[in-house]
Length: 128
Image (cartoon, rainbow, N blue to C red; front, side, top):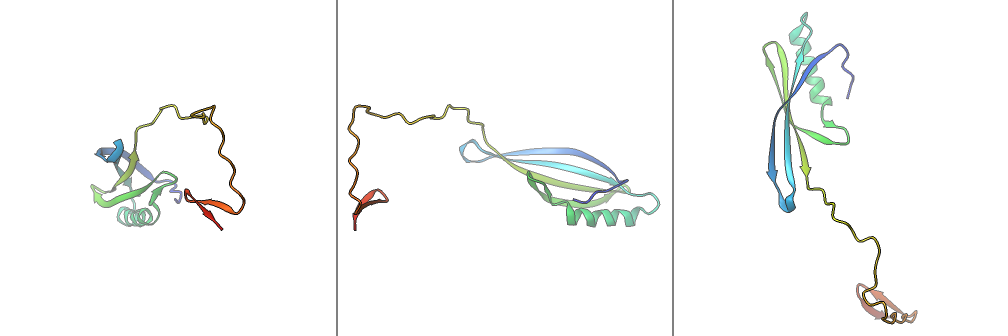
């Protein structure tokens, strides 16, 4: 995203929504509002210029999420932009995982090796 020098913005969270999904996952929508305060010497042209810059360049939060549902409106001499960020959340699984393979029957004899002319393919044995 381009650097906006000497620009004045106010960013605030305006709401959150949670939709349950399968397997305890959630689709979370975080809504934000950005207010841009234009140059008082040329407010309309400055707001239009910033609106088009934001339309072209404010597309994602890098390595995090895509910006969705962007809306641009002039309100009381300032440019107001609202947008959503979607995040899919799921519970953290702290269950201990299997660290090593333990033989089911440690006294069992190992399987004999197949002759070289026989190959295992997809769970069955084929002879060439």
